[in-house]
Length: 72
Image (tube, rainbow, N blue to C red; front, top):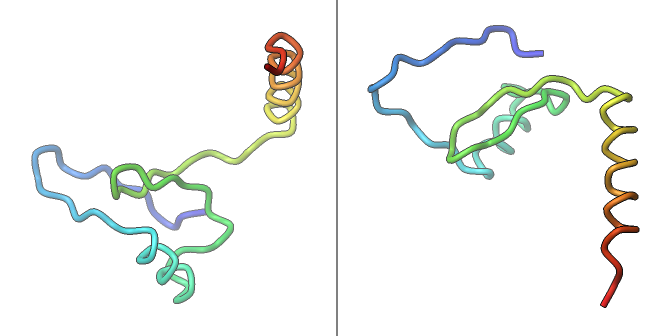
């Protein structure tokens, strides 16, 4: 879990990160490999943990869509 979350002031320039930079931060221990986040347009956006109920619902939806959309 991140030690601190902040909200950047709107209107100020932000530095975009690359995937390679994120990997380097994980290798250096700056970002834990267990942290859940997305890299959106170069910004690190924290995400909540995955819950088993969410995963079960997602699996059922994928199965239902697979059955409803036959292969060509």
